Length: 441
Picture 1 (cartoon, rainbow, N blue to C red):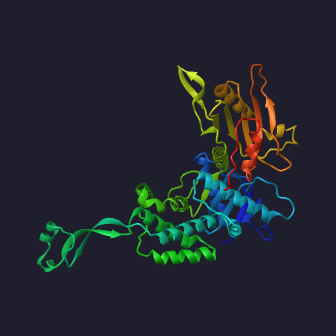
Picture 2 (tube, helix red, strand yellow):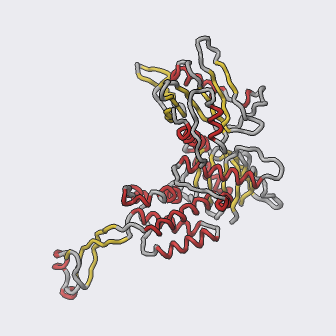
Picture 3 (cartoon, rainbow, N blue to C red):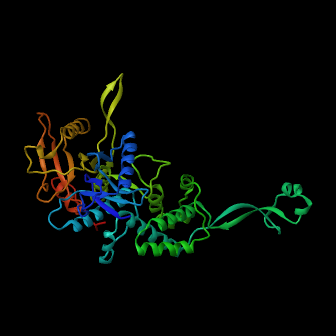
């Protein structure tokens, strides 16, 4: 079955004779794949997660989730973030840029040991998301094999014609005379059968079945032959709980998150027992929040950066606090004790649309007013961060609160996802903090 690529907020319809598949905002899949997506939509809606929205009898509209969905018929749908407008014939270039952006944001949010550098590696950005994850897993596994897998002692009970280890006397005495030459023994065997290796082997078996690129398939088969003595995991959840860390297993730290991605199969809600294939879905709102928080902590050396602070509440009931306020980011200068509250929103704004208030929502502004009142007493600024858009949202929009005692301002700032260092230099140019020069991820 073919693979499809669509952008968030795009449409998925049922294919028909003569339909064109080169539109990244609207794709057409088989009827069996569409029916499966409708079933997924119903199951997600019951759990409160909005991934799809019906837009007609034979059409679904995507929401703010990105990633990969695989259907039982073999159809794979890659969903990419939408942060730039497609103009003219630059569709493939935009898709590659969005794929590269998603890979960076996932690497930051999931703490993946992602390292890509040089012109030769740029071709990897052309791979669909699932093939990129598979290639990263295989590269980490190949490195691990070169450095050496870890063995462990396992207690084994078996019957042999020789004595080795500990004889199980009770079993031996109860054997019939015809089996007196067979010894039930118990021994510790030094072997590769340990939880970490079992999970990696299970992930490798999935990769061998799911990959569609020749390079990944060839490397996966080679690794499979080299690890034939390792059994697959019979209880993935339990083996992940038994995964050890420490100096002796430091080599396994790099491959663990890739193994979790392949075996854990990130989905917005639990669908245990149902078909999931190699399906991975991530909310863009959270990915954007983690991406901004990561670069703030990396660039602002003179500030303490905290996420999801929840020390303030709006109301009291019987002297008990209720309705917690939880801003995305709370930063405080280490020397002058200046504080700033920041909130991230994954939405495309347009500075020219003044009649529509630039695309800002009343609820978001009211939320920032509450943050300013309870966390800063209107003595310091609050900042709303939206994605940067060339020629549409590339400058700060500054508002004054309609409050006489307020010294605070509400800034709506663009965040350039491709150049976060320059963005933070511009955003904090009026505040007393140096921005460190760093190498981009």
